Image 1 (tube, rainbow, N blue to C red):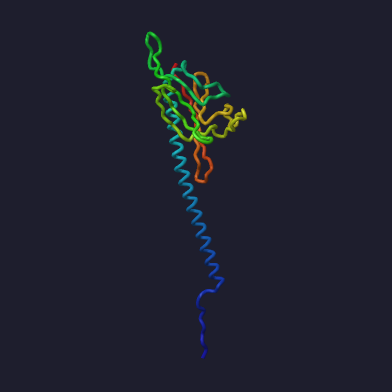
Image 2 (cartoon, rainbow, N blue to C red):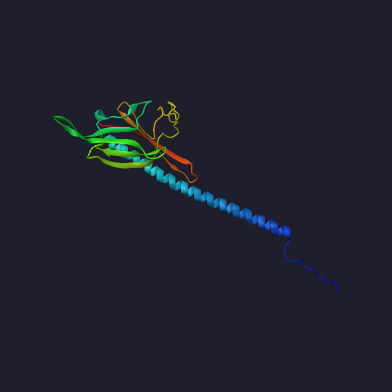
Length: 201
């Protein structure tokens, strides 16, 4: 009488192959999850930076739109630039002349390391001084600019401009702002915007 033997279980080679496949699948899933989290973090950071940058540039633009061009101090002709602007708003005209508001100043102010903030001040250096911080993530140098070499490294016709820079082109004031924060990988993530503003005559 012949006894038929049936194979039971798996061989060692089959078990090892199954384990290797599971490990590879687990690694791929982990990499996909990590990439998804990194993309989500970067997207959130980009949105926050974009909002901060646009809000800051819009505030500076609105302030300068009402400024009397004749009372403007700070912006320089290209290729030079300045990290500040001082101005007085034009409130109206009377027989005695133009009526000005209080002196205002917008400037880059260093905080720590290579970073700084954009500070708006009214009646600067006086007992009536008021101040508001408009941005806290402004580097000392404009995006893609190498400080101190006297060259136009980023090709915008300005030499060694700062993270906040003001230039003049006839009656027009150009506002250049860079903000920079660290990305999820610890590397700096810069973002920049330039806005053209015409002050009041």
